[in-house]
Amino acid sequence: IDRINERKDIYDYQLLGSLGIQSIGRQMFKKVIEKYSMKELLDMCENEYCAIYTLVNNVPGIKEKTATKIVQGINKNFELINLLNDVLNIKISGGEKKGKICFTNVRNKEVEEKLEQAGYEIVNSVTKDTTILVIPNGFTGSSSKIDKAKKYGTKILQIGDYELFKLYGGK
Image 1 (cartoon, rainbow, N blue to C red):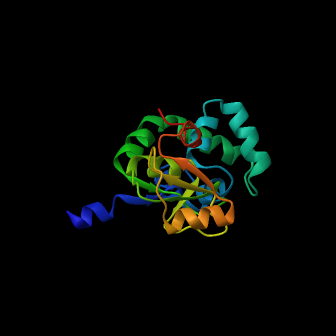
Image 2: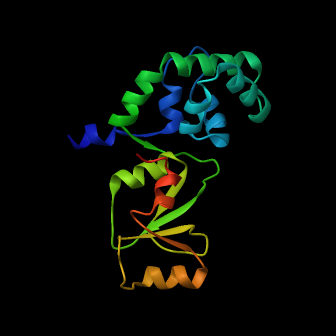
């Protein structure tokens, strides 16, 4: 069971590169994921022409033929990608992160996973480059993480704040 669960952890570019799109593998998707998160890519592919144009103009080394294969391959496998997204633990690979988010006195794996999928990095401690510290709803206490967040000017949000909800497009 442990070995099976270990296989459930996969990077976004590995998942997309394993779809069997002819001549498009992990390395190509690694380039694409450096510019666009998997969620952004899936959303973008709904409009084929726009997605092809965007990939050609914004991802170095991608020409129209390759962009077309990527977009059509994603659209063809859209249901499979969503199924795998629900079953696997898809980790966000390199590329630019939207920010670093730390939690204190509260853990919510579902929220953490959605934030990661939206391009945020979940960290265990507050540093100068931590973007947001998440605390429990109605929390009035203090902690070393809260003290550091205040010191560094890090935004502090409650787990139920709409602003946090908007970051990952929650429902």
